[in-house]
Image (cartoon, rainbow, N blue to C red; front, top):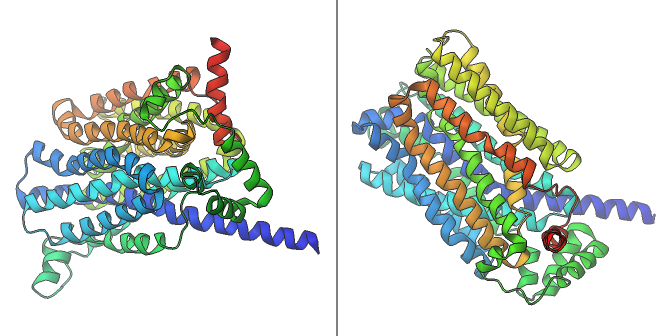
Length: 471
């Protein structure tokens, strides 16, 4: 009888954990959707507004500028007001952006609402994995944070599907007036506006989840934190978590200067370099400009969008590899295998373009290989690592710095890819991505520790003890 009750409580705790983490991961879904939906609109917006290469790059990357601003403020806001309220803010920004882009009357207004959406993405891209990392027990943390990346990839593939569907039905009759403008004459409006639906779901769902228990502990609300931790993992585990939290050095303040102490310097380097390298490897060049790249390889626009759907599906499928193995195999083996495979794939893609082997399936095959390698390594593992390596007192601010580094890399890729494709050609564009991706292998070998199964407090103690041992 007691065993049955315990099993039921365990199942209820697991269900509660999954549901809350899935709601938080919707921030990743919107991040992925908003990031990928742009790929199907670039050529359409370019034609409607007669954009040159620089304006085209600005249309894509202006949201990334918004992301940088959003990330810059999200760390301080989430540390001061809580993770939950900042996630609600991101949902409101997503919703306003989708509706504003759909109804924009000029290119300037479109850019303004793309910037608003970028603010939402920037906030969610930092706070969603942070919330999940703080909410999850250590033995499930890798899997739960990987759900964020899974939601992101699902958002990407659904954006591809919706883009392809709307593009293929743009010639259908929608009468006249606004409906015809949105769904036919300027179908990019429908592509961008569709994001309002998941944004509304995200906004409503956030009112049903609790605050991060570790943030509550930081604010001295032990009673609420204990109740949440007990519901997640039972009373014994809750007591253990709270005891470990209290054992941290209370003399440490919540200033970002904490990260520049010698003990945490290595964690800071990892937090800045790993996210940046995950972007300059070229993943978002494929996501943003995939149809254009495939068109250069001989695909038509509609078949290029279909190829982009395939890219999105591979991204989703191989993210499951990380979900089911990251807490068993560890973070480092996935990074070594994935980054190595990504570099090889990028070199081969560049060689195929250089040799003129663009007919047939080969370009698409190796783009899919690159996506697969990214999906089980860089994509999810980056978020897991930056969500767990920083000390409790400054985790929000530190993750904001790490995510800012990611978005700076993303901004550079979004702005420069059209220029590189025109000026350098496809072959050298992919070879440069391979060169930029390679340092991640050294980073994994030299700096990144294996954190599989370690609690956040144990990881914090690891940095201190490792520094003392070397000193």
